[in-house]
Image (cartoon, rainbow, N blue to C red; front, top):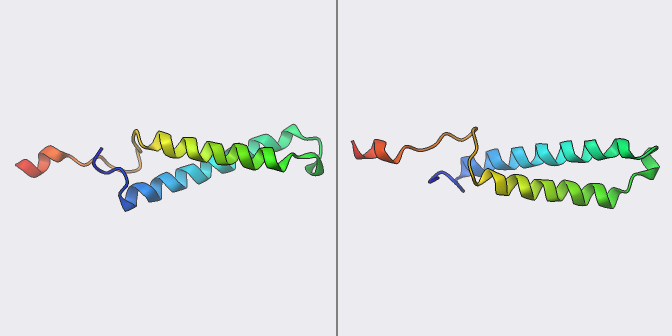
Length: 75
């Protein structure tokens, strides 16, 4: 977990969060009959919340960022 909050981690976590936010927003659009009937405040709020949850989930680990092996430096 030593690679959390490195530049590479932030890059991967941000991309993942943005993708999650976009998917959430797009998924909410078909709920309205027309584009003018979309509750944009709800869409933006839900998408933002999904981005925060994505970042928090990324703390557990990102497959895009390889784990550093702390034991490798001891050899």
